[in-house]
Length: 82
Image 1 (tube, rainbow, N blue to C red):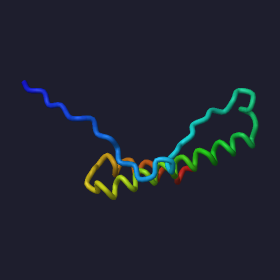
Image 2 (tube, helix red, strand yellow):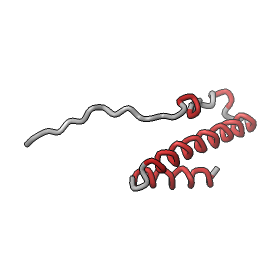
Image 3 (tube, rainbow, N blue to C red):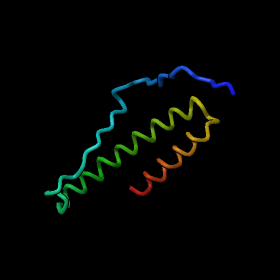
Image 4 (cartoon, rainbow, N blue to C red):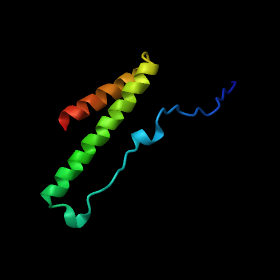
């Protein structure tokens, strides 16, 4: 059996700083604070929008890729929930 290896592919990013996603947790002493939760949801919504933009741009480059179609659908549904 022959083994096929591929060189590692570098992703093509048009604007690297444009898609920065900052993940932060809610601190234990702030968990019962309504404003902290609202701010967290706002930040989460922005992150989901960024992921949706990334998936859409990738889908334009490779329209027949089923995994990208699934990613677009998933991020769209996540946006609707938020």
